[in-house]
View 1 (cartoon, rainbow, N blue to C red):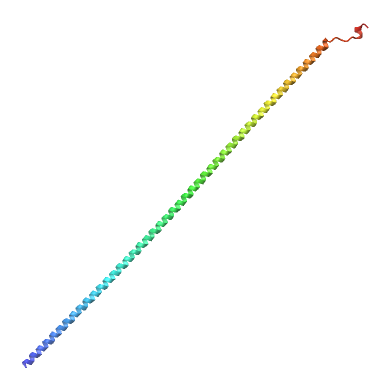
View 2: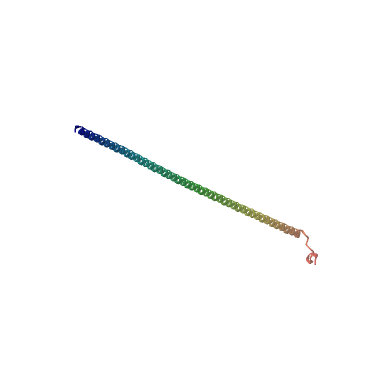
Length: 181
């Protein structure tokens, strides 16, 4: 009986040991499963973090690209403004050149008009001089004519005087009274 009891005790002890071992094994399995789950979670978290980092990098790259595009657009606008300013300056220079040319043309026209006026005045002066010369010539001719007339009159007077003298000095013809009738 004692042996049986001992055997039963031994069997129970063995069973308890086996149960303990099984429980320990289950605990170990649970721990391993927990560790695996934790590792998987860590991996998933790491992947999510990597994805987030990649997304952030992509966003940063997009922002940089947008900034570059904006800078390029601003540069293009500045270039266009500079070109417009240059065109405006060129137009202003052309307008100034045209104004200068017009002023030069006006000045040349005024000079031509002044020259024409001077020529006209000179022509008028020449005409006046010619008229004066003609008047002087006419006066001289008149004086000459007057002198000639005076000379003719003097000659006529001299002729008349000579005739009178001749008539006075010429002997009278014989008449009846002078012949002693």
